[in-house]
Amino acid sequence: MTNGMRRWTAAVLSAALGWALLPGRALAQRTQPETIYGEDDRRDLYQVQNPKVLDYADSTTALFPSYKVSVDSATGRAALGVSPYGEDMGLCPEEPFYKQKNGAFCSGSLVGEDLLMTAGHCVRSPDACKSTKFVFGFGIRKEGESPESVPAGDVFGCAELLGSVVEGQGADWALIRLDRKASGRKPLAIERSGKLENTAPLFVIGHPAGLPTKVAGGATVRDASPNGYFVANLDTYGGNSGSAVFNARTGKVEGILVRGEVDYVYRNGCRVSNVCPNEGCRGEDVTKVSSLSGLIPKLADEREAPEPEGEAPLEPQAKLRAPW
Image 1: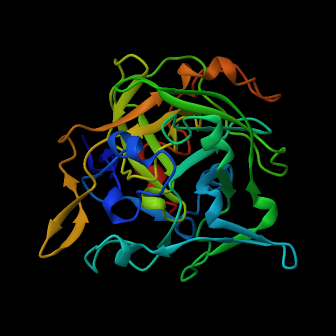
Image 2 (image 1 turned 135 degrees about the vertical axis):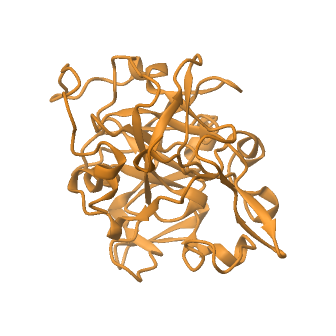
């Protein structure tokens, strides 16, 4: 394993530190992802220069409880209920993103004009779906910004829960029809072949610890053999549940981030990210997109094409990280 293929993982957020009120949190705390593998490769959007990656990020969402989203018709803005990440989580001041604000409880991705894909434990029932807002654009595009609102048009509700599956150590997914089409945002292409090999390069886009959008690359498939999911070394945390995991060669979604290692450990009276060796710890579980691809209509411009030969713009990690 080269430095360019370093693993990354993520962390589960503790209900005792402010997540107990999130929808479905009692179950989610047993199934969400957790930890850093090797070095922390999470990046804010202003640090990402690759236009393809930024396009993909535009089609990902933060899931907020409805009571944390307030639309002001006079300004056309939707205020988000966010709070100081570092202070609320009892983190050490040197922890990355300490001064940022968080509030999302899960992540999602647009896979149709009005179809959103996330983890099943994030949205387990029609009632949970109705009590969730799906927010696009909760990211930092300029250094120093602290997003606390988005345009009202970037907030969507749930029209219908098309399916939700939570299989302990298997598949974990939900498919949601939004209350309207997400005009101006391009649905992500999913990998329909069902073929995935160990060491395939990956990256993830989502909301670790409920923070504004982060992109984390440099990961690979650790074990593609389990039924319904695969294991990878992605840098993900609680809040990343539901994040789209991309094949860095093709740019297509291979799966949904759902489970993983422990996220934080105590050091000198405060908490820091749990760091594992590149090849250590349990790895992060990703539901294979083939578990629900039959429910996702093909895009009009979706092509049945073989993987491109040689290096693609997003692979390997050296290519993925360099423009960030």
